[in-house]
Each structure stands twice: as structure tokens, then as C-alpha cells.
Amino acid sequence: MSIRTRIGFALPLMLLCLAQGAAAVGTEPKDATPKEAPAATAAPAAAVPQGFSSYAAEPAGDNRQCVVGAVADEDGTNQKPFVYVEDTGANRVLWTRALELPTHTVQGRATHCLHKGGTVYVLLQADTQPAQSTSQTLLRVLELDAATGNPTASREVNMPGVADATSAWVDKGEDAFHLAGKGGVAVSGEYFRLADPDKHLPFTVTLH
Image (cartoon, rainbow, N blue to C red):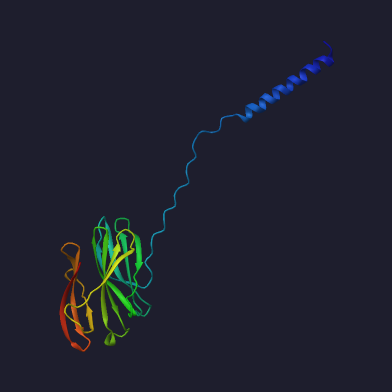
């Protein structure tokens, strides 16, 4: 066999080998090891704003605690009612809620809270004027979703059997705001008629 013949035979053979090698590289099995998913970023904890003052803290089930109070300016004025629920075991705030003031009021405080089932009950005391000497205090019970803090209901606390305009308040203590009967909430405190501000009278109202 001549040199030219050997070269002519070897060249196609070399090209065939190169083609087979390239195909083998293209069909190499990929790494079957699953890649780790990126670590989930924990949601930031809810924050309690500066200027918050606590009025009460009550158990809210499952190592949780409901805390009620108000957020005020540096000089203590312009109070706005505020509530949050925290996980006492993890020392972490689960949710916060700035509460709306009733119509015709300028400041207010969330002073009491209760928990039952999926509901947090909050007592709101709101003032019609910044100065207590000229203000009328109105009472309202709010119902919030225990898991999210979203409002679900709101009810005024009216003085029983009184048609005149009144101003009412509720002091601290479990007896002043507690569960009553099936789905009821009892509110106890004192009030006076605006026409007779020196005469203070007790009251108890049960809302269903």
C-alpha cells in the first residue's frame, strides 16, 4: 500500500473517532445530585413604635400575650390606641395594630384586652377633647382576629337607661372587663351626665 493510500484511509478514520468523542462528551450524564434550595428568609418581626405605653397585658393562649396601650407624642399628648400580640416563649411580636379612633374623638387609649377562641377583645376609651376638664370620654369594644389583628367588629358601650350625654371611664382590673356568659363581654366603670359632672355613678354593661 502506498503512502498516499495509507493517508487517504487514515484521515476518514480520524474524523470518525473525533465525531464519536464529541458525541460522547455531549451525552455525559449530568450531576444528579439535587441542589440545595436557598434558605428561606424569616419574615421580619412586627415592631412596636416609639412612644408606646402599656396599660395592660393579658394571656392570649398558646404562650401568647395581648398588650394594649397608646402611642403618644414626646410630651405624652395626642394619644392613639395601639395593641399587639407577642409570643412570650420566643420573645417576638407576632402582630401590631394601630386602632382607629371613634368619630368626634381626638385621642384615646386601649386599656383592657381579653382572649377567647379566635378573637381578641379590646376596650377603647376615647376623648372628645385633649383637656380632661372639658372632654367627654366614650367607650367602645373592638373585636380583632387573634391570628392577624384585623378588626372584625366594633360596638359602643352606652350607659344603661340614660338618654343624656355622658362621659364614662373604666379603671384597671380584671373585674372591669371580663367575659360574661356565652359570647358576652362585661364592662364595669363609672360615668357622669354632662349636665351634672360632679355626680359619679357606677355602671355595668354586658355586650353580646
